[in-house]
Length: 89
Image (cartoon, rainbow, N blue to C red; front, side, top):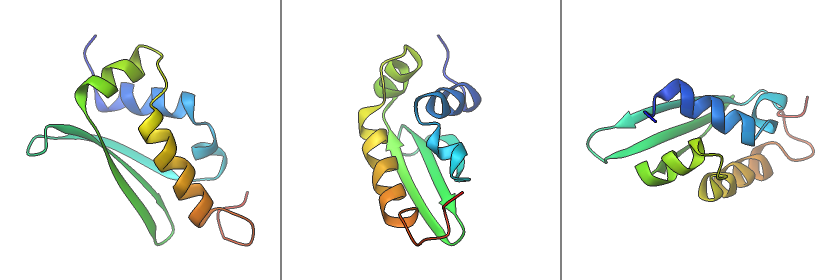
């Protein structure tokens, strides 16, 4: 299966629906220099950029949850979308 930014983004949103629920922006692209996929989360002035190696991206598309990415998303939500912050829906 070929990985595209749209297919990887869609799969990430399937695994982590809280991204959409909390109104967090997610963009995905491939960084040629780093040889890795880049997932960028943003909400207001807060931003998180995390890298996904091609093997992990392929596993993600094969319905194996992206554990490293899940940890990063969880930390972003904890830091910027916990009670009392502007991420609440």
